[in-house]
Amino acid sequence: MFMEVLKVSAKSNPNSVAGALA
Image (tube, rainbow, N blue to C red; front, side, top):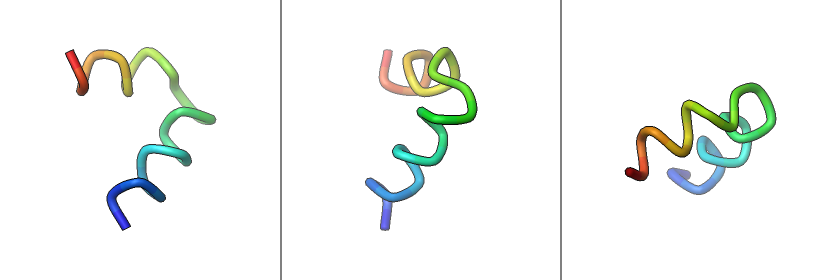
C-alpha cells in the first residue's frame, strides 16, 4: 500500500516524494 501512495504522489508531485525520501 505504501508503494501505491508513492506512485500516486510521484505523479502528482515528484518534489514531494523526493523530500519525503530525503
